[in-house]
Amino acid sequence: MISAGVITVSDRGARGEREDISGKEITSILSVIPAEVKAYCIIPDEKEAIKEAITKFVDEKRLDLVITTGGTGVSPRDVTPDATLEVIEKQIPGMAEAMRLESAKKTPHAMISRAVAGIRKESIIINLPGSPRGVKENLSVLVPALKHAIDKVKGDPSDCAS
Image 1 (tube, helix red, strand yellow):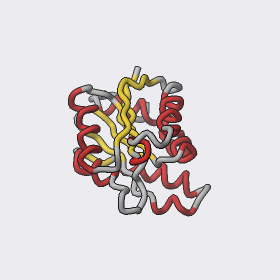
Image 2 (cartoon, one colour; image 1 turned 90 degrees about the horizontal axis):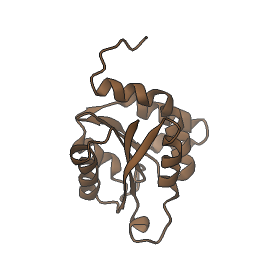
Image 3 (tube, helix red, strand yellow; image 1 turned 135 degrees about the vertical axis):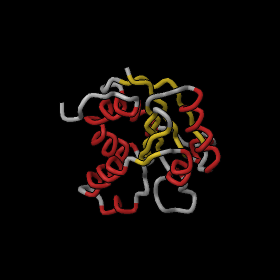
């Protein structure tokens, strides 16, 4: 089973002013992979807090998959992709491209998403939007490739075509 962590990035959520529906949606979708959410937190839109949460989930908890929700747009407080880029070792641009492509079928606003996906050590980190609908649309397009991607990151030597 895949071990996962969910990081909700929301100023209002961190202050307890908003229920974290997006984080619950991620947990629900991951259950079909199957993946178990072993770590969860809600933090404010602060670059250092985001970097700290991601590195803790990867370096200390050694989770296979870390998914963030929120802070992927272009407003001044949207810094999740910037923080993620500072802690990952490699990008997985195809994942971010697939998410934007799928979202663009439903809204032109998809083109302003700055979400990224990448690798740190043996973990995959994925940024998702902060809305439950955006989470569902974006994560659902990645689900078919997640287990294979995690296996490859961990060193699986088998051919990708098999």
